[in-house]
Every structure is written in structure tokens, then in C-alpha cells.
Length: 136
Image (cartoon, rainbow, N blue to C red; front, side, top):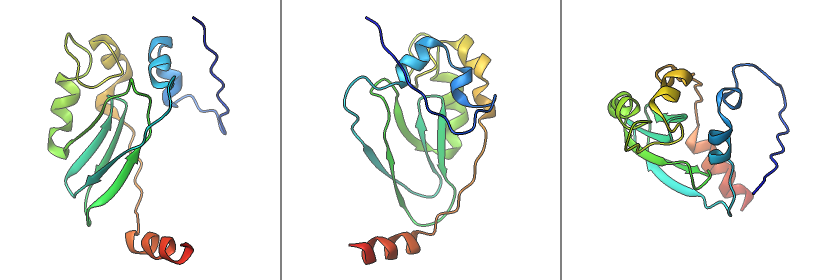
């Protein structure tokens, strides 16, 4: 069975995640069935993990709804922020991974999951709510 993946990136940079994934990992993150959004309510001190590749942390503020849209082969897991490091060490790769991709312990080390790049975004929940109400 063959597949074609069309990627239309804006700016190509060497530190993009896709440049560090194997063909098997790229196939895993590429959906092959209809995507089903999954919404979680994150409270301060919680984090959402998309496999061992993406980490979204709710640092402070009121509970907020986050919707993940990912391939059925990517594990979506919500946990406490203080457990993220332990989960990355024990539940990615290995014999019984809970978080995937990546699929092997070697790949976890190669990708360097302990050094997930940090991007901070402040979300004004009140402004987003008011905008949604006025557009309805």
C-alpha cells in the first residue's frame, strides 16, 4: 500500500519537528481516517501531551478547553504538569509505551524529548468569549 503526503510549509526551518521524524513516525502522525476532535478541560497545573512529541501546559488561570485534532495513532493524554518528566522517561518508547510516537527508546533519545521547545502564548479567555458571543 502506498501513500502520498503533501506538505505545504510556510517557512522551512531545520528545527521543525517533521525534519526529525522517521518515515514510520511521519506515517503515524498522518491521519488515514476521518479526524475526530477531542476536547479536554485543562486546569492550572495540568498538561496535555500528544504522544511524546507535543506538550501543552496550563500554567495558570481559569480552566480552559483545549481541542486536540490528531491522527488516531497519536496518543492524547492529560496529566499533572509535575508528572510530565516521569511520563516522558517511562512511557515513551520501550516495551509497553503509553505515549507514541516515538516508538522506541532510541528514538526518544535521538529526538531529545527532554528538551521540548517552549512556546508561550497568553490567552485572554474573556476577550475570546466576548468575541464568540458577538459573532453568534
